[in-house]
Image (cartoon, rainbow, N blue to C red; front, side, top):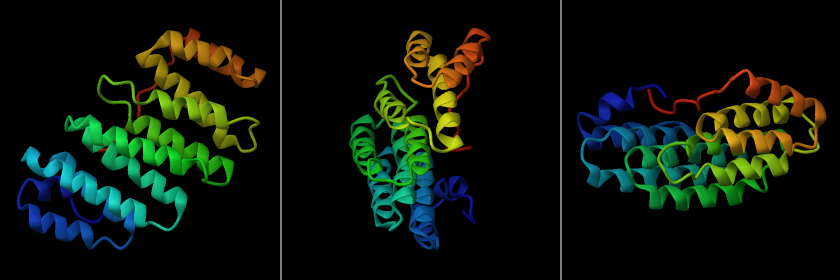
Length: 196
């Protein structure tokens, strides 16, 4: 993103929207529009701007990039207290992620969706978390193992018992031992910030 959409959305909405739509990729447009949805002053523009972000993400031809771009409007909607549309977008993104290849890219997409959903009280993060765990084995790329490890350490910040159970259920003994050691040493991890 070339411009500060946070600052622009606090000034003049139409100017900010035009700048966001001028981004050269659909992924860039989706992220920029989500920034605006997150920061626009009036709540009445949050949903329509987030929907525009989702539309841009869906136009992205690369399936991996499309799914990942949906994480931004999901997070923006949760931060702006619009969980119904966030849940709808999350379900759509998870459905699309099932066909993302290779396995490492699918892992990255689900991990990003999980982090986007880690805001609010509805525990929306559980579905992408469970899908991440279910689709990560056998591990064929190091990113899958890293994402499982980091995801479980993030969940430990919200629900330590669930994180420990998830680690204990892992079929990879080496990864299981690594994660259980991290949990026993209280190595929790926050989700990534989407807006700063």
